[in-house]
Amino acid sequence: MKTVYLDNNATTAVAPEVLDAMLPFLKDLYGNPSSMHNFGGQVGKFIDKAREQCAALIGAKRASDIIFTSCGTESDNTAIMSALSADPSKKHIVTTAVEHPAVRALCQKLVKQGYEVTEVGVDGSGILNVEYLKNAIRKDTTLVSVMWANNETGVLFPVEEIAKICEEKNVPFHTDAVQAAGKVAINVSNTPIDYLAVSGHKLHAPKGVGFLYLKRGAKYSPFIVGGHQERGKRGGTENVASIVALGAAAELAIKNIGRENKEVRLLRDKLENEIISSVPDSFVHGDRDHRLPNTSNIGFKNVEGEAILLLLNEYGICASSGSACTSGSLEPSHVLRAMKIPFDRAHGSIRFSLSGYSTEKEIEHTIEKMPKIIEKLRSISPFKSRG
Ligand SMILES: Cc1ncc(COP(=O)(O)O)c(C=O)c1O
Image (cartoon, rainbow, N blue to C red):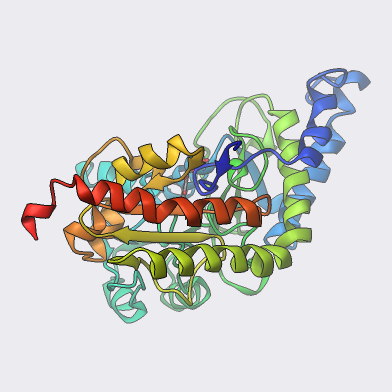
């Protein structure tokens, strides 16, 4: 059996339409959009088109609110550092305990530079208590940063409600929408979001491109200083082919979002339901109603996630234990720890994340293999003696 790729929250395949759109810019149309001659200048209009396509993906009224970046991490970092630059005397940031390292690691670095960071916790289902978050905002709060959807569990946060609270309290609001964009509807034109981060490789564009939505009037400080590209907001010659690809991927995502919510959700539910009914002591991590349609995080008691991944790999199945970005560590992820998932379940947790390319056959193959894998591992598990 060929590869069964169920790790789409780590990265996605470049869609064929997206590849077709970008290839001319890696071949004949290689000019620099800043050049005075037509050969370079002609590619500028394709960047403009991509900017419009990306604006449409998130319901931004003006294409000029989109700044192209190199990835989701750069978009997150730029947003945070921009918000902080508005009033350096304010030294308090509110965020959550389950953010991706693209936000969390920067906040931890800022603590060393004198900032105070309040990480609002989540409950056992990964749901954020908005009242706690509201109460955490202080007079010296300079930014609230809350992800739209969690990368490990898929749990969705009430971003619209949080954005309104921040607006009332006059505190800038940033959301890391890297996992949400293309999977759930986003409309920044009726939500007071100041900054929103998106990454191309999570929505069938290539790696190494992303964008930041910047609300008009929101404080901005360039993270990369150089030429006048992106109207002076982000220096460096544009990654034209990837920007065009991101535009094409955004357009494709708008077209497919209904399908993502129906067909992908059905396949995800089938996978999840069959696994938890056929494997004893298996549990879904994360609220099952408020979740991305493609993500399933399942904990298997008394087995190691890494061992499950290795056996899945033998059957050609790609998944993740904890978060792909934090794997390598044997500790349960910070997300599952924040949810207070018992150690013997968190340790054996696997994230399956589907895409529009996932097929029924692949899901059935995975459903068939899972009980055998867990049974085999439990028969040799070092956890057994711990009960
Ligand atoms: C929620 C979230 N934010 C940010 C990122 C970072 O995006 P990138 O890999 O494009 O830097 C990821 C990547 O996994 C993510 O899942």
